[in-house]
Image 1 (tube, rainbow, N blue to C red):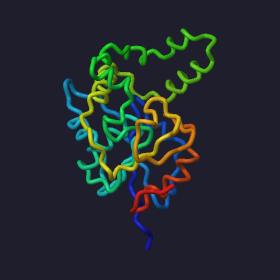
Image 2: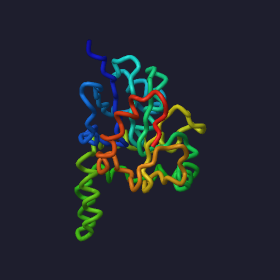
Image 3: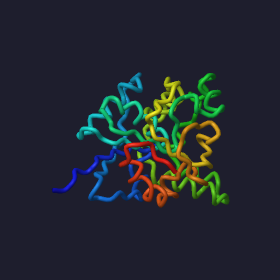
Image 4: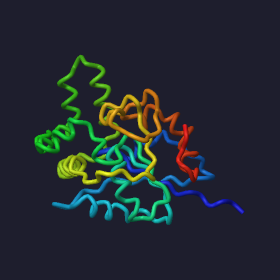
Length: 227
């Protein structure tokens, strides 16, 4: 008799489409991979209510949740709602005390309200500002390729709810995979994580080899993964 496969649900980063997971390959005889798309928030919707609405797509009992960046925050909120057997976050934070100082400054001053979210709706035009900077242009092209949501209402809501996330104490059961060279959430502010040497904030894309090698064991093991 064949062993039942483990359902694994993936949540991408802010505004990203599930295409960011296109290079992640889990053994099909052991795992079922399911991708979760972002939905547009209702006006004034709380993070918890949003997560509850998003969780209706999860149809399996005891799922494993994997979230990248903002998706890592979302899966932590969804974990108890769906009875997740395991929550894994990548390039994210376990609580607001792991935010870098600049995020606390933006939170306390509410400067995030001034972020030009409309620019994310027109990345093709933003590229024209940097005609000779190939590095910036390549990064913008990468963002454009994997951008899944351009809705300003969603973008404004996301920035606000990330920065105002209320969780101050980490859940010790959450498994955290983090790059040592992450510029968005610098590793020096992060505690108790599985380090990926040289990994950046987009290592789900450019370090997929590490993920494909280690994720099956991290998902399957009953105990916290040891490097």
